Image (cartoon, each protein chain N blue to C red):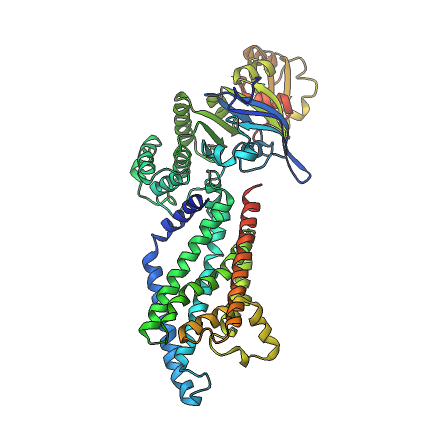
Length: 258
Length: 312
C-alpha cells in the first residue's frame, strides 16, 4: 500500500524538481518580508503604545501566527489547482490509475506530497523566526509538525472537494470567503478576544485559530499552561485532517472508478 | 469464436455496463485469443470505450462475466492492470515532464527499479522513433508524436495485452501510417492487441478479427474479409449526381446490381461486377457526374448492418 502510494508521491517530487529553486526562495522571502513589515515596522509602533497589552513584543506574538497562516495558504493552494490538473487538465491521475496504482494510492501519494511541501515551508519559516529572534523557546521546533498538521487540516478537505470539480470557478470562492478571512481573523494579528462576540465561535470551529494557538504556545514556551485546551486544539486539527483524508479517498475513488 | 476463461486472454459473456438509466454496453459476448489483433468497430457512442474501460479494470462491470488473463477484474484489478498496456482515447501524458521522464515515472508505477525503467525507456523511445526528443518537454510535440509516446509508455511494463482506444483519431494520414506500422510490429512480436476504431481502414489494416458494435450491442463478428463476404458484395459502384438530381431518381435505380443504398450525397450500388453496373446505368439514361467502382469495405458492412455510415 505505502509502496504504491510512494510511486504517486515520486511523480509529484519529479514535478517539483523542475521548480524547487524558485519555490524555496519564495519560502524564505515571504516570512522575511512579513516579519520586517509587520513584526518590526508595525510592531515597533504597537509596542510603543501599550507595552504589555499582548504580554510579549508584537514580533514574538505575530511570528508563530504567521507560521500557521502561511502554511495554511500554501496547503490550500496545493490542494486546489494541482488536484484539478491531475483530474481534469493533464489527467495524470487517470494515467496512474491505468497501472497497478489504486485511487487510494494516488490520493495518499498526493496528500503525502503536500504534507512534505508544507513541512518544508514551515521549517524554512521557523529558521527565519530564529534568525529574527522572533521565538523564545527551543520548543519552536515542534511548531513545524504542528504547522504541517494545521496545513493538512485545510489541505485534505479542500483536496476532497477539488477532486469533484470540473472547473476552477469555486476555488476563488474558497480563497476569498474562506482562507483570506481566516488569515485575518484567526488570532494571527491580534487575539480573537478582540473580535465581536458573535464572530469568535467562527474561529473556534475552523482549524486555523487552533493551529495558531499551538504554534504560539510552542514558540513562546507557554504551552502546557492549559493542557486540556492544548489537547482540544490538537484534536480539532486531527479531526479536520483525518476527516478530510477519508473524504479525499472517497472522492478520488468516485472520480476515477466509473 | 467460442472460448473459455482459460484459453482466452479476454472472455466476456453477457457483459453489461449501465450508467444510471443509460445502457452503454448491452450484454455482449466475445473472446480474444492470445496473439490476436481484435477490434471493436463502431460509430461514436456505440459503447466501445465503455467496453475498453471495463477490460482496462478502471470501470466496474454492471452485469455479466468478464475474465482477463483468467482473472476477475472486480477482485484482481491491480494485478490485471500490471500486465496490460493502455493507450487511452485522449492523451494523458504529463505535459510538465520531459518525454523521457514520462516513461521512467510510468515504469515506476509498475514497480520497476529506476535503472530498469531507464533502460526500457531508452529502448522504447528508439522503437517509437522519439530518441532525439528524449529530453524535450512533451507540450510542443505533434499529435502523432504524443500518440507514439503514449504507445511507448503503455509498453513499459512489457504487457501481454495492449488496449488501444481510437489510437489514430485526429492524426494526419502520414502519422497514422507510421503508427499502424509500429502496431503491426508489436503484433508480429506476439503482443495481443485490442483496439477500438471508427475508421474502417484502420480495422482492415490491423485487425485479424473484429466485432461491429452499434447501440451498445455487437451486431456482427468475423475477420474483415469474412464480414465483407457475408454482408456485402465484391464490388461497389458509387454514382454521384448533380445537386437536385438524386431526388428525381425514384424507381430508375431498381434492379441495378444486387442492392442499392442512397446516401445524402451519392448512390451506392452493390454487385459483383461494378463496371457492368456503370454501363447499365448509362444505358438507362442516367447521367451521374462521377462514377467510381471500388471493392467493398467494412464501411459497406456497417451500412448494411445499421443503415448508417460510420463517420458522420
